[in-house]
Each structure stands twice: as structure tokens, then as C-alpha cells.
Amino acid sequence: MLKWRCWRKASDLTCNALPIVEKELSIGLVNRSFLVRSGRFRAVVRVNSMDSDKLGIDRFREAQILKALEGKEFVPNILYWDADVLVTEYISGVKLDNESLKSSEFRSHLSSVLHGIQTTRVSDINRFSYLECCNRYARNLPYNPSEVVDWERLCIVAKEIDRSFRAPVLCHHDLIAENIIIRQDSIVFIDWEFAALGHPAFDYVKLFGENIPRGMLSSRDISSGVIKQLEFLQSAIDDLWFAAQNIVKRSSDERGQK
View 1 (cartoon, rainbow, N blue to C red):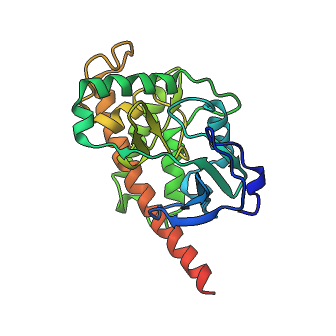
View 2: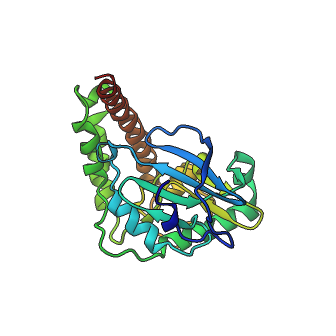
């Protein structure tokens, strides 16, 4: 907060005085975020977890992606960033619900946003490996990952997914309802921590499962078998991540008690 003078302008508002914390937003599983204000100016201050790397988060990669997306209507304006904190404009709206997903008009808008993401060029970051992602989470577990997931099958599927596409595209990788904010004239995706260059169908499967609306992936040579593999992969990665997160949180709590 003491660096508020370095914050950029948000839309037509500027932070002209030291902001105060209005409230802590719903406590995330990784970071803590706060809604702050100064007069009519409002922003979200995210305090990064000290264990980000153990949870598969590359802050440098996130910064590069946010920089590449700067100015896009589907991303909050970045007001300030360093290794410990991310400050973004506050986005008011409603979260995604199942009724919205059933609307053909909304789906068309959502498809346009996903296309805008996937056609964004990001330099200086490597292609994402889903197999390495699984291995990274498994290394943080003090027990065999087979206690959490079908590890043998997961490794096979992750390797096959890594080999199933030639040209990676920018993926959000965490399109849950809480990370999609709907406004009257736009759809905004927040929390880009897990974004990377990945599989072209990943975000679609995350949103729709195997029932991806006809036409959304019509130009992609992606079989129904790969879609089913992605469904399994996503579910298994989520299970592994939560298992790793529980271990990291326990370790963090123990550090705090010393």
C-alpha cells in the first residue's frame, strides 16, 4: 500500500491518496486479496503466497502474459505489479452461472473472448507440459500420488495430451465460475496465475466438459477421444493440486506457529 503513488491510472480514475482497505475479499486457496479504495477509486490488491512455486505458479510467466494481454477488454487493467503484490482495477459484475452458459448469445460472446485469448502472442515463455505439471504436484506430496489419483493412467494421458497438439495457444487454465465476471457489455476473466501456452481445447473443456457447443472448435482437428482425455486430465490435476495445497498450507501454518 505504501507504493500507491506508483499505481497506474484505472479507467478515468486516479488514486490521489493513500487507499484504505474496504474489506478482504473471499479468501482464496493460494493468495489473499483485498478491496481498497481512495475516494471513488477502487482496486484489488492481491498479496501473493510465499509458496506459489510449490503450487505450480510461475509469477514471471503470469507477468509476461498479463503484459501481452494489456488493453484487452476481457482482462482487468493492471495498476501495479511486483514479486509480492498484484494490483488490478476492481471489476464489478456477476459471476458466471449455468443459465448464462445455456444462452446462445452469451456463448457467442464467450467464444469470441476465447478466440481473442488464443490468438494473443506471448513471447519468452515455454510451451506448457501437462505431464511435468502432474509430476511437480506429486513431488510435493509426502505419500504416493496413487493415493489421490489413478497415477499410472494420469501419466499416460498427460503424455498423450502433450503430444496431441503442435501449436500451443494461450490458455487461462482455471476457468471456474469465480474467475469469470459478466458485465452488461463484456466478459472479464480474472486470476491468470495458471495461464500458459497449452492445449487449444483446454479452456473449452473446462467450461463445457465434453458438451462443447457445435462450431466452437470446428476449425480444430480435435477428436472426441482427446476431449475425454482432457476431462480426465483436468479432474486429476485438480485432485493433485488440492492434495499438494493441503500439504503446503499445513507447512505454512506450522511455520506461523514457530
